[in-house]
Image (tube, rainbow, N blue to C red; front, side, top):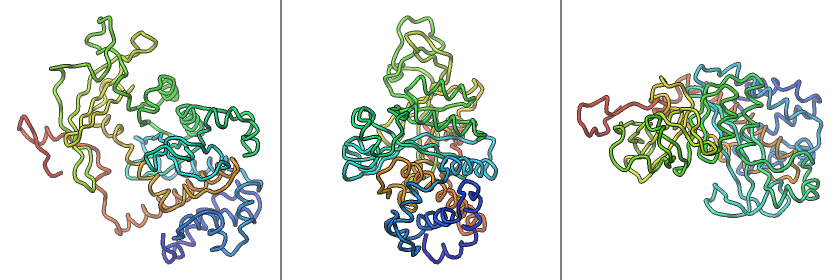
Length: 405
């Protein structure tokens, strides 16, 4: 955000940050809270502690101490953030989205850093991985919470290294799906109303994750790997489960063509099948669910989704939730490019957790201001947020082509 625009929003920013005053007891820390958020929203090329402090004309050490050792409750800030979202952006069809992101880091001192797959670069390198919960309500989206993925061998099993980074002794290795479920449980049990949960196959492949989501009362539409196996409900008597990628060698349900959304590169169009299915759970059929198979019309890509939504759920709704992951991908992009999500340079776990929470607060303010300005007419409605529609229903041709929406 350029400084002229940020300065024009100074009153709105002060009002926004004052809503967290009871989470941050001392006036100096409250002022640092506002400085940090303002710095993240500014046009600084690097949004780590030192440039933010220098721009605000305060000693960098004081802002670093605010992040790492000052006594304020980052958990309460996260809870207030969630309360604000629930109060101002509630939606009957609200979707929670789970995903992870990563950012390269040099050295060995940043909590959780090791050589591992880095999605930001698409290769194995020294990086940190964090797992996040996003929130989607109609056209509005933001990040709610995030936590660090702590690798087992290089961190969990080296408690001396963990203590040096301020990682509590009772915080050990958790697989990413467990971190995700912890974030989701905190949000739902804290009063956030969600109806749906969307996740990629890193999470959807885990039975324990899916069961945990269902126990929270949510409907999930989660991607699963092509090797996941089970039985079509119409063939439940068959002895051998089949992988979802091998369910039909020929024939099967008719493909329906759906225009999922419009993108900068043109429309995203998929051929889709949806059937009732029982996934294999410990060698026996689980409960009947939806299996949705989507094949990209223009690219060699097939996705498989599993959903515990009711039997009468329209396919349009299942697809809308399944393909909602673009929201969190955009949130990560904005958080890195505009609020400095990947600019953390500290060596303490608490500082990292606070940075993630403050970044979510900055992102919420940014999202709300953009929504306000958009409502005033400064921006046109994005067609990419519209629910998918069935191309087949728009034409009588047996092989429908994409037509303008």
